[in-house]
Amino acid sequence: MATYFEQLKARLAQVSDLQRAAAVLEWDQQVNMPHGGSNARARQLATLHELAHTLFVAEVTGDWLEHAAAEVAAMSPDSNEACLVRVTRRDYDRLRRVPGSLVAERAQVTAEAFQAWEQARAESRFAMFAPHLQRVLDVTSRSAEALGYEDCIYDALLDQFEPEMRTKDVTGIFAELRNGLVRLVRAISDHGRPIDDSVLSRRFPEAAQWDFGLTVLEDMGFDTACGRQDRSAHPFTTSFSPHDVRITTRINPNQLHSGLFSTVHEGGHALYDQGISMELDRTPLCDGASFSLHESQSRLWENIVARSHCFWTHYLPRLTEYFPQQLADQTVDSFYRAINRVEPSLIRVEADEVTYNLHIFLRFELEQELLEGRLKVSELPEAWNAKMESYLGILPGDDATGVLQDVHWSSGSFGYFPSYALGNLLAVQFYNQALQDMPELPDQIAQGYLHPLRAWLRDHIHIHGKKMMPDQLVRQVTGQPLSAAPFLTYLETKYAEIYGL
Ligand code: ZN
Image (cartoon, rainbow, N blue to C red):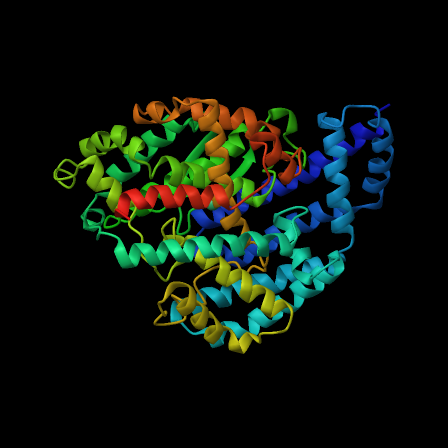
């Protein structure tokens, strides 16, 4: 007779299969599906998600969980079994608090809001989106109230992406980060020697960009027997199992950096998903430890590795083989400076390393104001523009390049944005630790030998999946908690050199 733990594990495997099947449909929706398929696909996804939720929060799952906890009580707290019970207990207690009717209502409201957002953005008219955003905000608030929190409503939402982190922790870290970043941006604009990045907007045929990106992915250790790259309007990564990880990229013939860095970015996410131990497959542990942990991997590869001087020592000659005319006048120095140009810009996803986090502060503050009722939806565009002016010194010319630019609010993902900034900080902390363990790392990167870094990340981070709480994992790997100081030091050193400060 099966133990309770085995019965629990079989149930979790079914839930995982349904979720991964939904992920296949979502991947297809963004990569292949004709527009006419949207309504049918929305219903199919709703059915799969509802089935997964119902199986997971069922009474019997709770019974098995309770008995399984007793069965694994004598095992090491680090064992896969003990971790599985602990993480499942946390998820179960949280998700049980949200009534099924609210889950269904949320799915419906966000599906409609997403469609409205797409149209509103295309026409650059916030007013078209506003009533939908109000509904999303209402259903999000009710979900947050159901989930519960101690200090403030934002805590309940943040916890979905950053387990056990509190809004006040993020506020503290952002305050430190803000001072350093504002100082650096000002120093660059006041004293920095100008950078010419026009080389990046020469004409780079798409097929050659695609081929070069694939060679970098393979050098990074992306396993093409267990993954593939496709194209989509918005690049993303999704995993159906560590043996089947999908990434997408977008290629613009007049913007070399766009496709190149999005390929490397998603490649960093993919290495995490491919690196999770197969022992954790078909369980809730087969995932990143948090959204910021996941983002730390993509940012580490995109910014710290692929925007470094040593990386281009090796790769500029390779890239020049693909684009001999376009890059004939480039040296490693000139190309390195071009890809690291700092300039306040309107669009978050196109922002440079220095100004990127300023976009996050703005969203983090507006989300809290909306949820706490201090800001009305109708006042949002004005509040957005005021913050853009104060943080970045520029104003969007319309809603499409302002308040409507991100998909997140239409899908109800309030509480998500901080993960991007926290991922930037963690990327530096992890890289510094890898460098301490392997001082030869920059020399290896300068020879295009990227496997040692991939192996280090796999052994220290990827393999564990979601077994540890994010804070525990960060301390185990770096000996330190999450902190803004290493990131600021990294930026100040790098950009003082680039801009001659
Ligand atoms: Zn990412």
